[in-house]
Length: 81
Image (cartoon, rainbow, N blue to C red; front, side, top):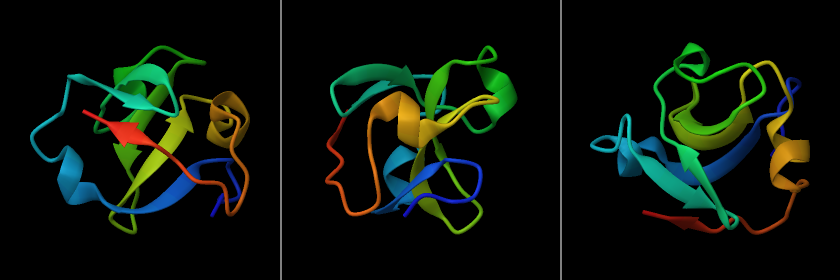
């Protein structure tokens, strides 16, 4: 699912990121920071975070995660620690 802001919302529980804040992980081949908030990264930078619904999101601070990660509704997303 992509929300109205362009965040790519996965069906992966946010609990997988619980001990990873401030580290990096790989999402669809891109190494990105794992951050609690968008403000933890520079404007335009990609990140992994947990959305208000409790699932992992591929996002961009003040941008569109779906475009930045090249994903659309129904596409598989690969996450690696």
